Length: 336
Image (tube, rainbow, N blue to C red; front, side):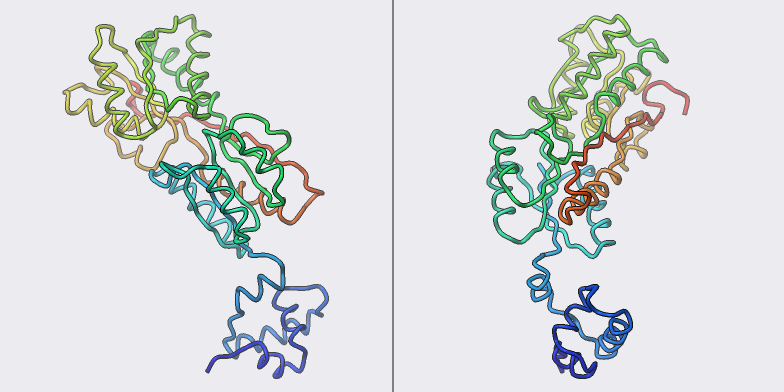
């Protein structure tokens, strides 16, 4: 037999409105009354209607998440961290992707205009014209993740891509004395790729190593472009003695190609990556990479977004750059 809110109210000897307020943890209901109602709810195994609750609270208790892609270990870990933090707070998560044919603006407008979410976490390393205008005009709170630019006070959280890339390239130079350091960069126009490339160039300049365009190739942050980039660098006349791949998926592609070509890592060429995805620790030799606090990135994005939704601290702006650190393996030449 289906149990509805009327039966709970009747058994508790209170109004339906009081039951609803108690289940929504309203301060208008006394603690002992809340406890009595909760006991009856448990006894009757009553499950509140989520749609009715959202209407009464004028909230969907749902976070929208828009990502550039859903494929790859980085994105899966990021989604997991968001879902775990939201679950702790009894919120739901709605995931959407703007990759391939889907336009980021269309995806964002659809999600924000649907009324299905109370706020949006937007990861947009290749932000499109018009995005800020949509965000600034909308009443739906948004937090930007790994996006370049200030955007006039918009909530943001990002990784210190520049420092991470700088540190790992300087490690290759100072610890191992590599002079010909190639780079397989991410796609053009991508915020993460541009910041990591800037860190790479800065480390070269600081250590008085001239930039060599022949040692720089663009990839797509995936295994296939890592294979292509590695092949390009190793087939030219001036070969690198070390290669910095701008993410671990491209480093994985470099590993696969090196094995096919009979090139030994790090004896013939050293390899370093970025992200420290779970898979990287199982590569042989263990990949030297830059650790990115993916869990913190997702969990803090949820915390900041809920603060904005609840208008905590008078809509105080949240802006944070998360630090990175080097994880030493033996792919760079270190004894590990």
